Image 1 (tube, one colour):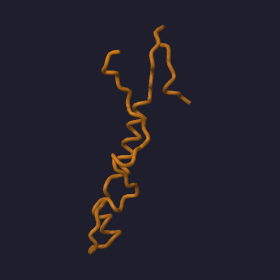
Image 2: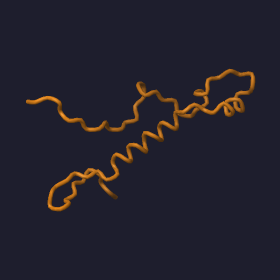
Image 3: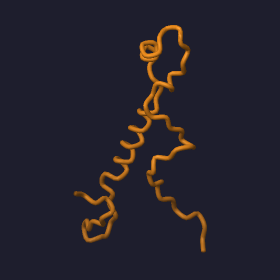
Image 4: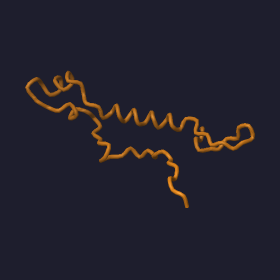
Length: 84
């Protein structure tokens, strides 16, 4: 198993390498984004019927808001903007 936090020595200099780290994060974010999309109109009509007025988000399996429920993914490292 590849450990993305492992330090690799390339050309004699130490260099931190996260080979697939950011890619995996993008995959997780895009998957979570796909799960919270609204259902298509035809799905709502098929499930609820023609006369029922329901919001398309009521049919989706995962209900998540960006501010309310977090995905537990680490934020990127930021440089310190202060001296001292």
